[in-house]
Amino acid sequence: HSFPPRRSSDLIDGKVNLIVAASPEANAAGIKAGDLIKAIAPRVGGGGGGRPDMAQAGGKNPAGIPDAFAAVADFLAQN
Image 1 (tube, one colour):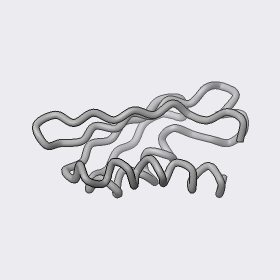
Image 2 (cartoon, rainbow, N blue to C red):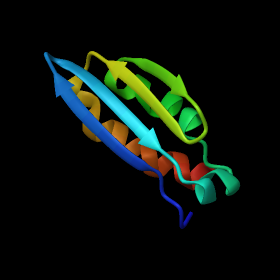
Image 3 (tube, rainbow, N blue to C red):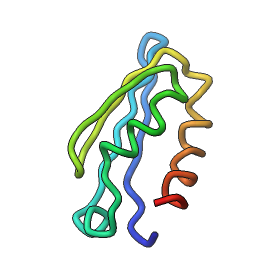
């Protein structure tokens, strides 16, 4: 898709925080931030959710951050 969502991660006290934002164009193309965060959060040992335009998740496995970012590409390829 030509409308990739923005993603970010942060590590505080050994915990992972993920945030995904999707533009209105991405939403119109069927990409929802909440669906994406639910797909990638397990990679960092956590869960999350949110709205179509903004979602967040937390986890306890910082080693999973690269895998979570790689899962974004997989999610976009399937949707």
